[in-house]
Length: 209
Image: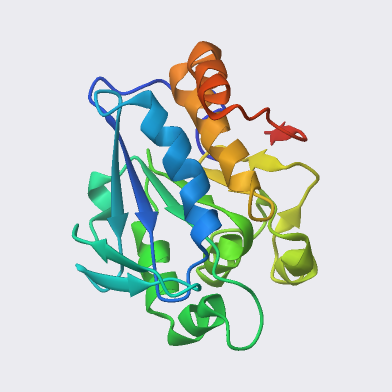
């Protein structure tokens, strides 16, 4: 069932956002919302890179190395975001789905008060965890039929907010997801400020529950 309504009450402490990385993750899929959240400032929002395997180096799809120092600790997160890692045979995403450890960890992380998000094909990792079954969601257009076949209720929208599940379309839509979450937790003025700093106007629609 959907979680809290689209507009969320901001916690008294900084909002804790964990972005999940893995080998083969796409750079733009995590860079978009990371950049947006950085505009809000550390007093309001604390960001962490995490991997299900604990602290280690992750190699992105383009060969960049990212150091993830923080432990996998979903109970200390308010928001967990899963970026994509390509799609199809040989992709980082497919390797993680087959390995199974990340989908199992995501399924175990679900609890009241936690918002799970995904960018681009990252939604398919949530699907592999059983977290999109019967839920309103979206992903990159090349994966939408598979998402639907696996039980997700694929709907129109650059960003789809189903309460405690927030997903977006392909690649650059991660920027829109970040700005939407800023609006959801901190209000429209903060979201507009982020757009102005980035010189980026949101595209498409946000489909809310």
